[in-house]
Image (cartoon, rainbow, N blue to C red; front, side, top):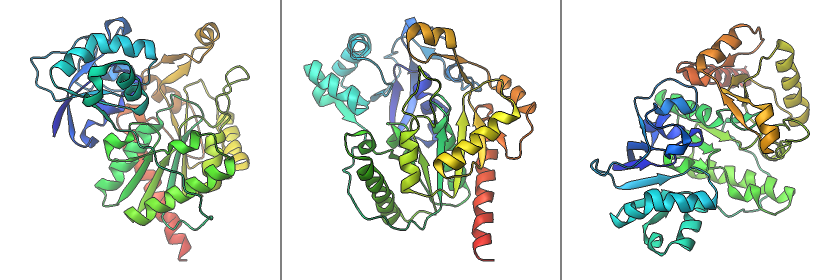
Length: 358
């Protein structure tokens, strides 16, 4: 087990601390964020509205604490990567540390700084797309999607995997984050974002899942879908739910979990979303989750990109209590609903399985 620090820590990589016990090969010993991000001396749990983690964020690397690896997994611009190199990585490389990063970050560092090349380990997968005829997938499939970004999809995926494994199931996860491999998971395949036809993507994705089914022989497959299910509005359309639509044409989920941004919802909203899932994507929603993030409309308009408020998990719990729904609504950030959600979905799959034999 190598000792690791994570730099540029923020909500994009909060799962690294939240689910550190599930990480393969690394023990996290420091959490570092730039001083300008306003996170120094705060608990690492402050970035996602969840409960405290007992990890305190630093703005520099403490070399008196032994470590082997620097995790650089946050998606950032090339300009910021240059600053990161000068602030954190240059000395770490001189000290013989390995930089574990995503492909985009690794490619830029290797191209820009000569001393990085032999110190970079890319964890991102890049599977080839194989075009196969559509075939049957026998393993039960759980799909986790979000109405939009910042809806804690990956947390839900990890909660499912953790619960299922604890209860004796062999669960294989295709994670929605490009650092999913660090949790001993598959990564959502990058060929789904390449310039190939929609038909090729659908056939290749089904082939990808069938290959995993053949190789792993799991009891359950969890698929996390990046992106959102629908546009936020006309100005911020996202990818229109196209990736989810392609996935749903490739596989037929046995359970579907949908996570939403925080808003002051009424009961009608969830009925509308259930209808969108049913008639646009051909699936029933088994349960919802509510994120601790809410869109900041004014800031979004000014920045020409979606910006978010972060709320507390208590605020989400309070909002959910005022709703009356036919299906459950969970809050994965409160430290309890992750297990409840996973238990509910597992029982739902068991009910479906029993019904098939009646």
